[in-house]
Length: 311
Image (tube, rainbow, N blue to C red):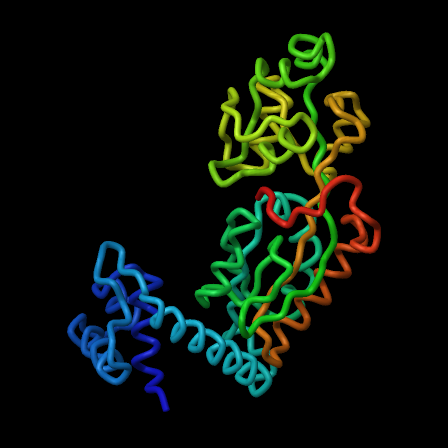
């Protein structure tokens, strides 16, 4: 049996990034925090944290944190049932999500559920091809990801497909693509990229124009809203999710540069494979919201079924 006071100390040290801050959160002395973590390390027979700045968990430490997070979630659910969803005892739910999902359909899908259940949402935003790492480490109970293969001890449920269109303003098109879109004009025009993790743009260039890992002129703007704003301000062309692009296309603010050449990104909800009300209800709410806005996975992808993409 684990000593859950020791596990709580370990989790707080890692989440707060150090022993001193963990002591303030737990309202005990720093030496008491150190003793609890040290005792747990002695029981496990190896180090559980890398004593750096900030403190990081070792591989075994991450496994223990994941176990503790699962137990804590189940205890919160039991407490909520016993207290009748006492508003003074809200349940915290940590989820990893990509920026485009957060900017479009995620909150409309989940906000009614969280309002009804007296749950508190804590989101961690990362590229959708990286969010599953947060689930693996136990930092979140679930994530929106492009990874279809479930992690060990997890379940992967399909959500739908986000489609990305290559767009620009009419003025930008007339300036840089007056002779059409080809490899030459794409290399001469500035692009807008979401982040250094963003590989969707390069995959698009490789798939449709045989430009493999080329160096391009690019603005890097790690915000879904800021990214779209930069494209609308004629700073560059970019790949924009269909939920954000279509209203601007309808108004003539943007134009699609390469009709028929779109990137489709399948999304999945990965979560711990335990009987927990949280993850079950969240998936039901997500899938209900997805049916209204995402493309169905039952429809064959137009050009690509790559599971690694952007945001």
